[in-house]
Image (cartoon, rainbow, N blue to C red; front, side, top):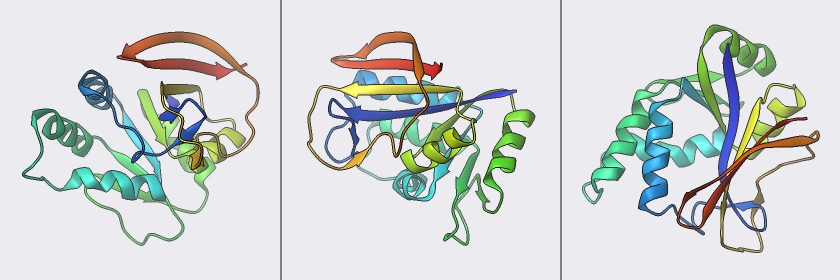
Length: 176
């Protein structure tokens, strides 16, 4: 049975905004290795549209960016959306009964399925499907934006903390 993990970068004040801060080279390498080890990634529509950046090769990319793109492209992706009609390569559109679809994925697969997108994570948490939360805390305060948590969560229990790279700390929580 697969484990569903919500993992995302956030500012010290709890916001997610890929334009406000970026991973340093060591953290980016961590994310490349993480992507390679997943059973797949479950996206909300908005996050999937952001990540589609990695579908096309870009001449300005360095080796690490090419490595990440290759790892991302190789992973199965499931996209939860009521508005999209189709998705890109190695991706499957999920619509309708999302709870049953995700329960099925968890039952069929082994390893970790990463959840990307605060709204999707909230819905999956409400269904009791998220097994672990990995918060990558960056030492920046942006003061506005999309909060990491799109709504209240049941109590969580800290199971690990680790400095990943530079000043970024990963806090790992499970439902209490």
